[in-house]
Length: 139
Image 1 (cartoon, rainbow, N blue to C red):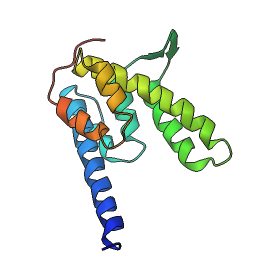
Image 2: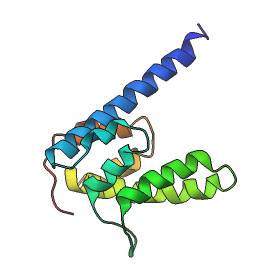
Image 3: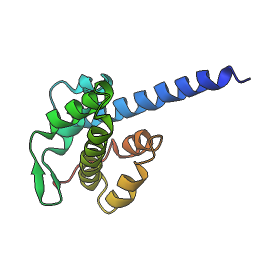
């Protein structure tokens, strides 16, 4: 039985990743974003997320080129061990504000609840799947 737990974890992780990728792909396709298929590629899916939201601000500080900053941050978190924790904190803050804007665009009124719930990793793919067919508003 203990041998099955890692297998179940892997299968659940793959299923959630595919759910998130499919949701990002559908949203990007509806918005005619080039290379929507990148939603299925690890790290490149953050490019699609950045293209979906456009401009992001952390407080009053605008973050330019979020479609490049997010995948670079995710990649740096994965490969640089010495300052990984610092990069991970900055990446998490940027990702939170990006998701907040995405949820504001696709589910106005629920953006704060959804952004906070998305801090639970297993919940984010489900929330993206729920909003994927919504029509975005300008935020």
